[in-house]
Length: 311
Ligand code: PEP
Ligand code: MG
Image (cartoon, rainbow, N blue to C red; front, side, top):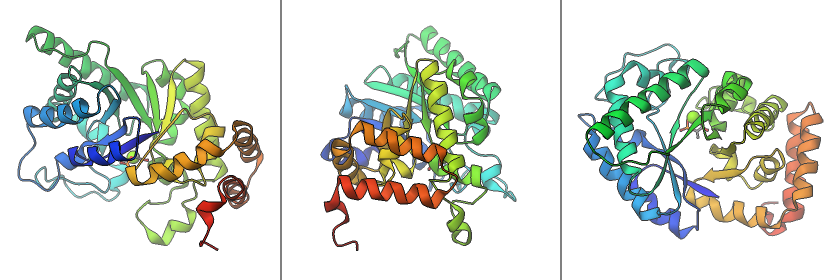
């Protein structure tokens, strides 16, 4: 299990909860609530500090995911009608190569100091992934020419958080070393339910059959191409849902440090066979509530103490 972090101050919690590295370093927090963009050097120092502190464990640094519900006051991005469907994450970075390249160079440089991996958010298809990879190659060539060290074999992954990416996962898998399913967005985009809007919260169902089929499709495409798949959205930190994810073939879970103990507690106790049975049932079912009820049943059987005092 690995941890999700937002800055270098989260590192002690990663260690305290016994996470095996960082599965998602959300770098937006370096960019928001400030007057200017962080420089390459400033970013490098932060990434290096985290990578060195957790070495040899992996630290997956996600490139900037501004837009949606996270904005930078400095960049003054024009208001959009549908920010979650708009100029967000990799779309913004590909359109602002100077911002993107400074971050890529900082991440590459930090890869010389620890087990750093790089991950792109909001990939919707192959062209976008190829464009992002081309920027990495250019940055590598620059660093080589400048004699600045970096890990030549730095692993790159793509987040799968848009339904189109899950549907073309077989093509994406040939261009990356891992996938990380961003279930927070995958659920909102698949079910057309804004993750921040309470009025549609009842539609935001992690066990909706459509979500589980997209996860299964992603896992199958990854494994057929010899790469691993993690989940780094909120569902990875839910002890009721984690066994289902493992049953669907997910290889790694990453969650807030505070949720790690509970999820570890249940996954150490649940039998592999039980998670497979749960996933088989879920993939046959057409009902989100029926699947969720099965998840609760297995979790209660496996770890009753987690449910004490919760009626
Ligand atoms: C996700 O979408 O599940 C995810 C992990 O990314 P974020 O919550 O930062 O959008
Ligand atoms: Mg996301």
